[in-house]
Length: 295
Length: 254
Ligand SMILES: Nc1ncnc2c1ncn2[C@@H]1O[C@H](COP(=O)(O)OP(=O)(O)OP(=O)(O)O)[C@@H](O)[C@H]1O
Ligand SMILES: [Mg+2]
Image (tube, each protein chain N blue to C red):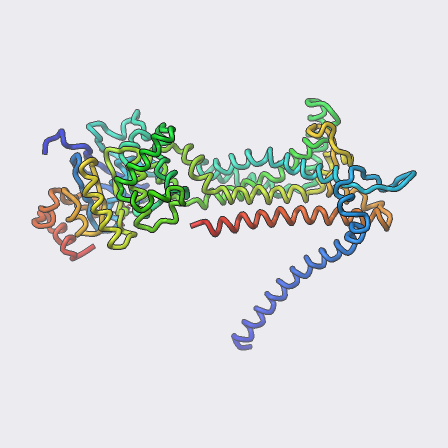
């Protein structure tokens, strides 16, 4: 075999694997839309997404498929997790890059790796047996709640937020830091006024990406949020249970009869898919603008 | 020279990076409102020396120092010296222009803001004065809110000088400020240094012999971490005492 034909073959192989990946993604999308889109159009995107009531097996009268409470639930829990994870993660990233002595750095990095490795079911289980009772006893309510879901998701988002932010902070040129210190700025002032602003877009990308991951997370959330497809009452009550879009699919897929009910679950998947895709697109846009502005 | 004119003086300064000694028993007196040039081949310790003066070496792990660096008679390495105040009074301009990724205005205002100036009118004044003193006002006076990184390299370096002037230092350390610039920008910076020396004590590291001869009053020649010869620039360039100084100046090595 000549070198040229070998090069060709390798190229072809690489091309084939790239194509396979794209095709698989496309197939999933096609399948999802084929199963869910007809229902979505028949029932009305508007009534589906903004409908308040989810009652697929109505004893008397028409069944209703409104997922608005679940959209709210998903966004609520994801946002809540970020409120907890971003300050903590950012603080940890700054400490990791700018302050920690080498042994502490190694320790934190090891810890982050461990955290990433915990399966989400295990985290959910931890939430179920520890966090939920803790919330029930200390804050009141049912225990299964937005708060519990947010905490568990925050733990899952934390390692990603730390490592992406740490990368963004590491990428800030050393010369900025030197210039600031040479003007008499303290280390803390330098971090706040030069390093963090310079790493801003990288951190923003981390946050948005984290949000997308959180919205898509299923198992752990399912185990601790109570899964009632109703809006919290009052809306800001983080101790109320909610159901997320992901949980809706998992819970009902088992017994959903073919027809409207089943298709409504696929339609739920479409909504979820679109939400995550939008967040990912925003995150990429932010990262790209950073590449272009970064000199 | 009378001792009252000595603003900075290093005495028997030794410095190690880990176990490698980078400065050996360096003693140099630096006169007030004069330009002192540091010359010598690459790696001889010039940058290391000036970083001792504003204690930028504090940031380097494993860096150890013995001896003294007196600033107005007081050792900057004494325990109760406040580095924030020290670095406010001893400014530094780096080899590569390093403006912050902010507007021109915010770059200049950065230092004064650290040191407590908040009033908009006061800041406006400092920004304008500093840019004028750095001979940059005519070029950027109308575009103060533009990103500093959009300026040319030479403009960026003058911006960095203006940023240093804005905190009203007494001493300015220049570490090869022109090595990344074209000849025209270099000439502008040299002119600037010649003006600034009326108000500031200046120490400049340079690899350019003509530059040292043009801008400085005194010159110190470094070799392998040692200060070989120090004196009036004219004397160093015309009648060097040490053979190695002569060799370096005439370009026979380094
Ligand atoms: N941060 C550091 N850690 C360890 N060694 C260093 C460090 N900075 C400089 N050195 C070493 O100290 C010696 C003096 O370096 P220095 O940068 O002061 O030289 P220089 O005269 O400024 O050279 P140049 O003209 O190339 O800038 C060199 O041998 C260098 O390798
Ligand atoms: Mg140097």
